[in-house]
Amino acid sequence: MTGQNAGAAPARVVLIEDSEPIRQMIAVYLTNNGMKVFEADTVSAGRRAVNLLKPQIVLLDLGLEDGDGIDLLPEIVNQKIPCMVISARSQALDRVISLEKGAHDYMTKPIELRELLLRMRRMMATQSIVSSPSETIWAFGEIKVDQALRAIIPASGTKNVPITAMEFKLLRMFTSRAGRVVDRAELAKVIGVRSVEVSRALDISVSRLRKKLRDAGYEVNLRSVRGSGYLFSSDAITLGDDADTVSYTHLR
Ligand code: CA
Image (cartoon, rainbow, N blue to C red):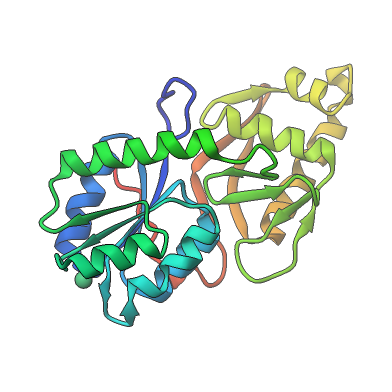
C-alpha cells in the first residue's frame, strides 16, 4: 500500500479455492482492481484466514480437498462477513442450500471476472450500509484492536495484549500514514508532550507499542527515521507462529 488511494484502505478478500489456476486468475484480477487478496486452498486454511483477518468479503468454493465449503458458510456469515459461493456445481439445490445457509450470492464456474467484481462491489456496498455501528473492532490489515476491551487481538492463539489509549492513538496515526514518515512534533502531540525536546518519552512509547504488537504476534516494520520521525510500512506486516497453513499473497 504505497500509493495513496484516496485514503481508502483496499478491501480485504479471503479467497478459498483449491484449484490453483482459478485461484490465481481471480486473485490477480481482484488485486489489479484494488483489492487485497488472501488465498486459502482448504476448508481449514480458509477458516483460519477468515478468523484471523476478518475480511470484508469471502469467496468460497464448495468442493475442497478437506471438506465441503458449505460447512464453513455458517461460521463466516455468523461473523457478519458477506460470502459469495463460487462453485462448479450448477444444480439448483446447491444454490438453494448455499443461500439458505447465508451466502449472499452464488456464481457458477466458469467465472466471468467482470461480473464477479461487480457483484462483489454490490455486496460490499450493501454491507457497509447495514454494518452495525456498535462494532468495536478496529482493524488495519491483519492487526486488530478491540476498542471496548482496549486490547490488541493476537494474531495467533495467545492472550489479548492490553493497549493504552495513547498507544492506540499512536497506532492509528501510524497506520493512517502507512508508508510515509510521521514527524516527531506530530507524534509528540499525540502522546501529550508539548516539546519535541522531551522526545525520549516518544521513543519509549513507540517502542512499547512495537513490543506489544510483537507480543500479539504482529511483526511490524515501524522504524525511526533519523532527525524526522517514524515510518510505518504496511507491507511489512507478517503474522507470527502458525500462519504457515494459510498463504498470504500480496500480489502486485
Ligand atoms: Ca474445487
